[in-house]
Amino acid sequence: MPTKLLKASTFRLTLVYLALFCVSAGVLFGFIYVASSTYMERQTEETITAEITGFVDQYRLRGLGGLRNTIAQRAAARPDRASIYLLVDRTDRIMAGNIDRWPEGQETDEGYVLFPIETGVDENDEPVFHRAIARGFLLQNNARLLVGRDIEERLSIQATLFNTLVIGGGIMIVLGVAGGLVMSRWMLGRLDDVNRATTRIMMGDLTQRFADKGSGDEFDELARNLNRMLDRIERLLAGMRQVTDNVAHDLRTPLNRLRSRIEVALMGEQTDEARELLEATVRDADSLIQTFNAILSIARAESGEQQAEFEPFSLREMAQDVTELYEPLGEERNIVVLLNAPADVQVIGNRHLVAQALANLVDNAIKYGSEAGHVLVEVRARPGPSLIVSDDGPGIPPEMRERALERFVRLDPERTTPGNGLGLSLVAAVARLHEAKLSLDDARPGLRVSMTFPAIPAPANARQEARLPA
Image (cartoon, rainbow, N blue to C red; front, side, top):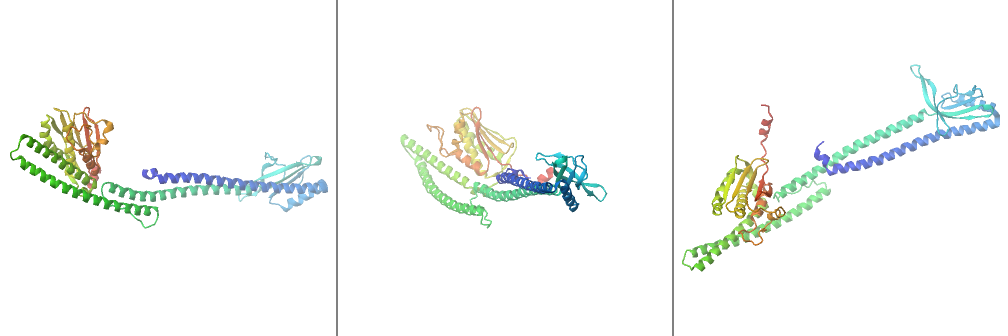
């Protein structure tokens, strides 16, 4: 039985209801058995009591001789010994009846005696015994009267009733478990459809929709409502994306023109004060352009549209390019940027976005690392394809690491270092797009940021070859 099915809430809920139903059914079946058995026992006792009352009347009216004649007539009328009669004198000599001696058996609390009686022989000439119940009385002159009934048929009916209830209960449990399995599998199937669609939507595929089976049940109603909600969200995001692109384009273009004009102006003759102001304006324009670029990159990464551009690429080659690019920047702060990538590791993703995320991590490491220190970029294959960037700066306190991934959050309260607070936000967006695990840890000293990507599934023929014996 699949482990997923055993862990399913529907299956566990079915088992709980089944257990409650079994307990209820067990109580009901027990009541039916006890009530039926008690009724049949009472019927037997009432029959014996009625016959005893009749014999007592005969004894009072006709004496011992009249009682003997009555018993003899009834015994002759019932040769099958369904009713048992016996009248003996003080010496236990049989005066009348259909059994040959006073029985010895188990006495009940109500004064009855349980004993076996021989009712005939079977096909092998072996004697057949039935169980019987009787009650004895002492008469005048120490004579004794015994009146009873053959209860073999009653006990057989009780045994049949008991076996029927037990078998019925077993069938009910088997059918209940089977029904629970079928219902759980059906529920899991519908929930798996919802989970698969939800996973694809979380990965950015807003065109994904929940399946409507057309059965008109609650799942179909939920699917229709969710699909309508996704339609609305998709329209809103498309509108926001269009507005964002337009705003970014409308603002970036004038900023680039402004920057170009200032650079042209810097080529001419200016006073030192004017030159300083123009250079400061260029730096501010660069900062604004970088902020717009970062916002657009985050928006594109979170939209999931660039999943269509996913392809296998080498983490080592990409890390080598980024490391070489940032080595001059590190040298400005006397920081050595090192690369440790002993083996090539392939991942599937958007190489440009991953490179941009790694560049942000290296840029932050240089920016916040210790002067004359080092920044280490690592590429590892185990436990999964990973990019790791470590510095020897002050690091980030554990309670601030989650917040550092939010947009426009800068942990430097005085904001003395350059930046816009979007670098780690872009890294987090790229990690979500690639379903990579992003973690910020203590490098002792410094910060250690790692991105662990999903491994590329091995081809089916490769897995088969791996299973073949050498």
